Length: 366
Image (tube, rainbow, N blue to C red):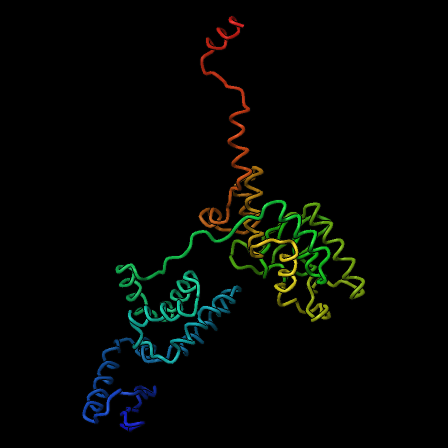
């Protein structure tokens, strides 16, 4: 069916139970009729011989995204980023039919997200989800864009920093004076255990084993991070004991299934739910300590400290939960002091000769 809106012709028809209602961008009815026929032909060409593929090709991307996320929740625990990434894809392309999404649409999506100041790394992940949603056609688009070197946007390699010891000390001092009772333990967990923000917020008392001096991480961003055990050092032990005393005074008891960082604004009230954010308290601590950086940089700092103190790669990976050496190296920073000490050591070390005769002649001359 053709109809006019503001002197522009539109077509409206049903194709395999999917409504197609679009503008022809033309004031000519003859051109509009041809545009409708061409649109029908394009839809027919998008149909393959397999019934399931046929149905998916003429479905709106938003419908496929809903089904994909429902299945994703059943298979994986780390759903947060998938929901975030797919959410942006649906927001910009959700009303399009799968058959209409081609190379140009993907490139346009990249441009639109860049205009929104999204990070290239995030956009690359969103495109990965988009092409997965498209199925076979997505794989073809992936191959063509990779060949043209347009599949991924260039992303910055440096992803963080390692805090200097003086900065860490200042932040630790400020956390003790924080108005938020959470920060007095949350920061030591980040500094001494390298736990991620989400891992800290979701921590339950059943995961802390003070008698055996270790804690166990629950749900995590990566499979390697989930369920890992982290020894509790003396500094972290002291912070846990202090937080536990505050908790008992506040709630009169501690239950294993209660969260270590209870929900509630402006003060914690419900231990059966965990706090939703630590950002406000963290920003205050960081500002008062005169430090620039991110919460996640505490992980960079711990990895750097462990490496500088001689810990092996496998030990570090077991603590922080990275699955590959490549990812671990992205987090490793060698600070100026460590490099300076290493170079200075070759000046202060005695020169050793490989030739025993050299040492004998030196002794004779002496």
